[in-house]
Image 1 (cartoon, one colour):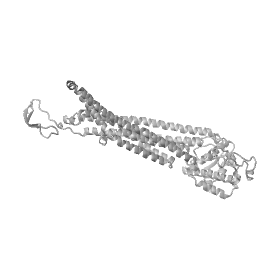
Image 2 (image 1 turned 60 degrees about the horizontal axis):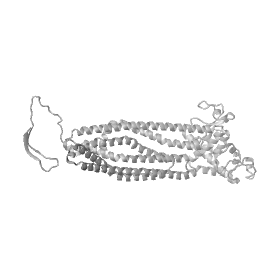
Image 3 (image 1 turned 180 degrees about the horizontal axis):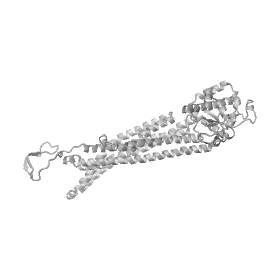
Image 4 (image 1 turned 135 degrees about the vertical axis):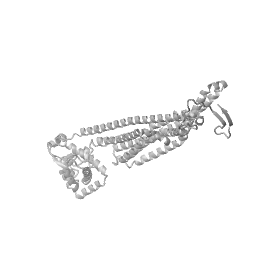
Length: 549
């Protein structure tokens, strides 16, 4: 294969463009599961709210959430929010009361524009820590008051009397802590009561919150953001719908970009393959036209025909499919592993096991099928030779009545080729269902392990779905590589056979600078003491022959 690499030099610009397009296609394809995860995690589970820091918050919510923050976090909160009236306008020229209807009756706190990413990250962590501090405080409060799960005091004035106060309950569940479904204004009523709790309770609750994963803290804060937005009168349904539509349109755009890249890569790879095959056929024909009988006896006419047609076709097929698969599969596999690890490192062992099994299977099949691929082209030569000899010697065959012998000879060559082809096809056919079994087994294992992590709040449903998609892309990359093992061995043999023809120098070479004889000259050919020996013979067939022609 390397010996024929020079034939790709004229097509290097197109090859580079194709590889760049393959990278673009891989980026598009690898981002689709990520956006699908966002639709599930953010669009469905979080009502389309992706931020952990609210863009706007009521004064009551501002005071309430600052209760569960440290002094530094409260200072950060004060510098990051400004009080705005409903008639004030944002940077887009819209009045705040148009976005948040509650701003028409009372001023609200709005997030300051142009905050740095570091400040936003600090705010996200502060709100997440505050949310879990509140959750832990409410759990401690419920335990101290002896309140059953599913109930909380509706009136702070009677909360201190214990759970026996009749009718003093509401649907706030400090154990389940479904923040998205509660009325945040009911939680505000508990602020005077919570303020009476001993400081060690708040300290213990905050320490427990700080022990949690930062990502989980930020994800939990989005639930409180949803409650703040509902308090301000924001249409959460429309907000969620707009988010899903926006991400869906972006996914459609990515799919369109991937499709365009695929079409362009197919066009370029087809042109490169066809151009390379054209140049190979031209050089083979040019070389064969200078061969003498010695070279034709070395290769045989049937073999030269096969090398200039079938062998070149194998190279063309490898280039046309290989540019799209051989280059694309490693990009997808590497990118898929990186993206999958971003979703979950705890399930990375599943991908590692699947890849190891797939590589082992491919290597075993390659070791079994490779010798047969090498024999395949020789068998094609053999059947071409038998067919050509039969066609050229029809008159002799009829004269000596050897038609039955020729039929048996062709039948044997045909059966040998058929048996080898069947063996290769059966081997490759066995590989596909085994890989599909491995792929489906990996999917089941991901669902099994991921479901346990989702139940333990260590992973989100959307992330598990995205991890499944990335695992599928990684396995499909190995499937592409395995498909290439069908073409690479046979094309490698064909390339070697073509290189043998191109590297063979004719035994009879025309002079580099032939001299023209005068038109008036009359020449003759004379042999003096000439000897002749057949190629490979031990002695001369003719010795010391002299004559004039």
